[in-house]
Every structure is written in C-alpha cells, then in structure tokens.
Image (tube, rainbow over all chains, first blue to last red; front, top):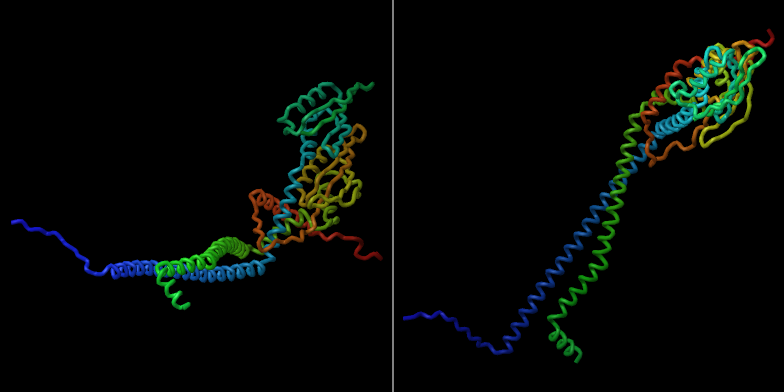
Length: 184
Length: 231
C-alpha cells in the first residue's frame, strides 16, 4: 500500500480579502524599509554632529597650545635676536673673508721671484691684475721667474696669464723687465 | 467632499506616499545637513593638521630657545661684532692696523681716508689708504696679518716701489674696512631659528680665537690727547 504526502492548499478567503492582505503586507514592508532608512539617516546625522563637536574641541585645544607656544617664544625673543644677529653677521664675515684672491696672488708672485731679481715696482689693481717691474743682473733670473710663474703648484693656481710687457738692458748691464700678471 | 477625495487619494497611493516623504526628507537632510557638515569636517581636518604642524614647529623652536646659553651667545656676539662692528669704529681699526704694521716690521708713513661709505647688499665699507716703508718680506708679513686681522679688512690695491737700489720699498695700500649696521629683523614667531652650520662654527671658533688674542687691542682705550693739556 503506497502512502502519498501530497499537500493540498485551498484558499477559502474571498479574493478581496486576499488582495487587501497582499497590500497590507507590501505596505508593512515599505514602512519597515522607510523606518530603517530614516533611522540610518538619523544615526549618520548624529554621527557627523558628534565628529564635528569632537573636532571643535580638538581645534580649541590646539589653538590654546599654539597660543601658549607663541607666548613662550615671545618671552624668549632676546635669545632669538642673538641667534638671528649672530647668524647674519657670520654669513657676512664669511662672504668677506673668502675673497682674499689679491693677497694670495701677491704673496704667491712675490714668493716665486728669484733671489737675484729685485722688484722695483709692484702694483696690484682692483681687478687683481698685478704689474711688476723687476731688475736683475742676468737674464736667467727672468727665465727662472717665468718658469716659476708657469707652474701652478708654485703659485697655488692663482695666475691665469702672464704677459712680458717690456724687456731692456741698460748701460749698467742690468736687465729691466715689466710683467703683467692676470689672476684666475 | 474634500476629505473623501483625500481619503481616496491616500488609500490609492498609501504604498507610495510614505517612502516618497521619507525619501525626500532623506535627500533634503543629506543635501542641507550631512554634506555641508562633512565638507566642513574635511576643511577643519586640514586646518587642524596645519595647526598641529605649526604647533610642532613652535614647540621645537621654544625648546631650542630655552636651551640657548645666554653667556655663550653674548660672547660669540662680541667676537662677531669685533670682526664686523655695527658702526665704523675708526679708532679700533687704526689701532689694529698700527699694531700689524709694527709687528710686521714696516714703518707707517701715513694713513688717510680715501673714500666715504660704500654699501653693498648688507655691509658698508670705507676705504683707508696707508703708506708704509719696509722690505718685501715685511710687506708680505703685513699682508698675511691682514688676513688674520681681528677686524674684517680687505686689501684692494697694492703699489710698491723700491727706494733706489735698496731692498726697501715704499708701498701704498688701499684697504676696505667693513662694518654692518644691525638688522631690524630680529626674527619672527613663525620664522625658524637659524642654526649654525659647520662652516659657521669653524668661523666662529676662529673669530673667538682672534678675539681672545686681540682682547688688548679691541678693548684698548685710545688716548685722544695729553691727560693734562697744561703740562
């Protein structure tokens, strides 16, 4: 004998009532969604307000700290003045002392003059061009001097060009020559 | 009649009315409350970050200022002001030059003003012309001393002429002497505190050494005449 488990559903309600129940169900669902949406929005709005309040308090606290730090700096203004003036002055001194080309050029050139050469005239102008008149008993002193001026190691590399302006030998057998030396 | 019409309208569209009202309310709240609040939030967050950064900088500066040793700074400033005074301080430069000339073995013949003040971007200078006599070695020694001078000097021109056939040369030197008035800008709250670089520290050490060795010169009171003019 076979057992059948078939389910038979018979709606005995009138069609109007069934339609009304369907509409009521739909309305209830819509209402639930609306309430959920409204509540979410309320939470979102409340959240943004809460964040803004916290943020306002943070900014107030930061402002107070900034004012406190500023007043501390203003109280120590003298020390700041010391530091600014010292730095400014050191920078100026550094600018002025680094440019000592003229003295270096002068010292280097006088150094390379041979012992038997006598410097009669030496002139260093504002552009650092050095004109010197030298006298010596022999021409080898001039050769030696020019050779020395050529060597950057002996002149610390301060010379860019050397011109022999004049060379003469007097009745007294003394050579007199004039050199124009340009700085680098 | 109207009530009846409204009732019918409600019954007909009741499924749509509530979602519509809530939807419109949501949109209005989002448009006029939530979005402006969020925009303000982001703006203020940026401001807050900027303020916190500034606070960090200010606190660091205040801390650095608190650690500055007044005595050391005053001493450093004194050394710097001897090297580059705030005014001409002619007596000081004359004493320094005279001392260097004597120590180098030269003989001073004359000192004169050549030109009045010339200003560059920051510093101002005046020119002194000095005439000295002595050997080339003494002149070189003197020039080397000008580079080690406690006051900033720059030799601009040198004219040396041998006297006869002797080793003695008469030399005219033009020297720029510098000074720098104190700047009116002594820092501002938001201006970072200047720090001394390695080069600055090295220079400062040199200045302090010169300041110590030349203390007698730089603090020297110049006698301007006889103590008793009737003697």
